[in-house]
Image (cartoon, rainbow, N blue to C red; front, side, top):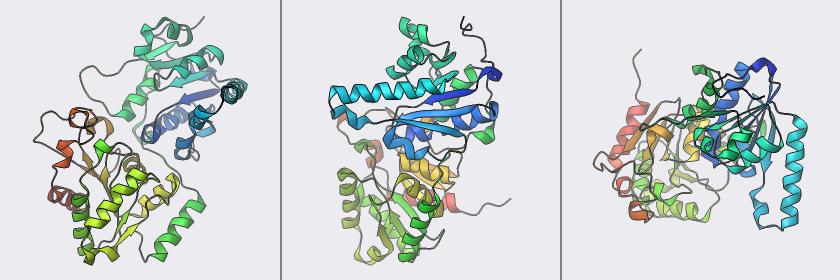
Length: 370
């Protein structure tokens, strides 16, 4: 008989745990402390994770992880038979692991399928699912979200563990991305080829997969120009995506000719672990609310992050020296909308002056007295 929802999970009876986070890159990285906290609380247990294939590089060398399972969303365009075979193969592999505990960090319906068919003894998910009768058949524990207040996404993820009796330790809450030796060597070689020293450049990431989070290209160019003029070269990074490529092209086009030799374009050339290796060598990261911002935080690099409609209290840089630049003149933010009126352009972000970003960079890099 499953325990009453108020009962903690007896970790001595748990030999294998499956953590699922079927979301985007930043969401997966912000779930990485869940693996660390679980391993600390149940050191004898094997911790597995299930994520989308494109986000797997963010977790694949996590020191607490035993097995990493993935879902290929590319199969959505394949035939029904191919999709069915993939689903059956995944379910068989998960059932063969015999997980005792399922930690489902979203309301994705796949969690219910796993809870019902893989049959873990204990399963925890968000409280919103508790009101659906089918979810009560598969899950034993439900954790609530804060009511009327904001809470950082890392802490909200960890609430799943608090609900089952695990108290996270602060030292286990940091984000973790582990580049391979090959990732480190490739980045070192690229920097050496460009004459860039460790700690001797700024990383700027102008784009986001969400256009309403992007800043104005001419102002990003202004910041790059000023940094280059101060003797701090700039490395521009971005995803291998046509929209992000276009944003960076606009930044490059807006740069004064004198600054261009000190601005290096690495857009679309780095994997996620390589991006982490690059960020670890940067003096500062400057960019908008995006997965690379969280990668830089995981690398321990000081972060200057520009926020518009998203809430920095939920998504801000985590456990790292940082400054958030956000409008104080738009009482509507954070509205969480995809631009003003749904128009993909956020005025609270677009109107931020370059001077405020430069001041934030100076402040986060200023020496601190003991």
